[in-house]
Image (tube, rainbow, N blue to C red; front, side):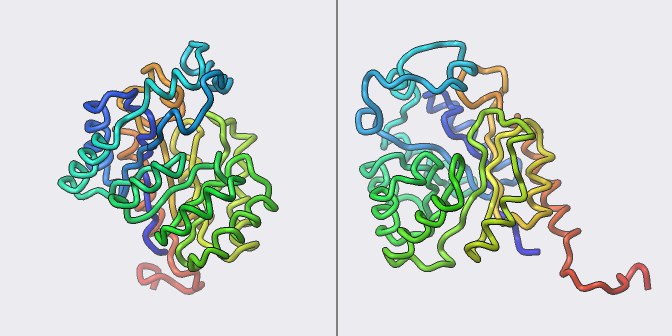
Length: 272
């Protein structure tokens, strides 16, 4: 089995504190993850001042403020992302961040080698066209989407001219934390068969066993939120792994890679 790319999703678990963001980079690197990923946006370009929080955000933060106020509090500056990129370079872990609007995508284009597009933009075809036009590989998350919506997004990206081997789909359930009954892991196989593309899995369940099952199903990429402490206040901490758990997940995925083999039924050397 080929190397599974493991993305430690820092996301907004830095709570708007650059020092926490630096600590999360070290956690990802120490655990052996391939990538540490953040989110980049300008709040004024993303939401209206009176947009309400999602219900899971209210439940996970214990607060009911505007989406604008929450995002503004969690926003990092472009200068701070430059600083985080340099830290990643020194630790030998790939820096990645999800842009949520075009200005941030244009900024990130100078410091990322590939783009991750979040589930919320799956049906935002103008944005997909813009990011695909930058010419870098894309990881496209498909949470909340139907197969028809995924097909439309793939078509939009391909029409811009991005090669098929530059596009990876991510199965996801957009709930934090996600219930087991809502995960539908076999959709990984469905999308691979439908599009012939690499398909990974962005996990929002609690624990590490569902990502391991996804690897056994053939997921080529695993994304999992990481936090310094799950009891911290914020929208995503509850669905995240703490440092020791992230290291355990990485180690377990590497073991499953070795166990998958080539699929040819024959006696192993040990059996012989």
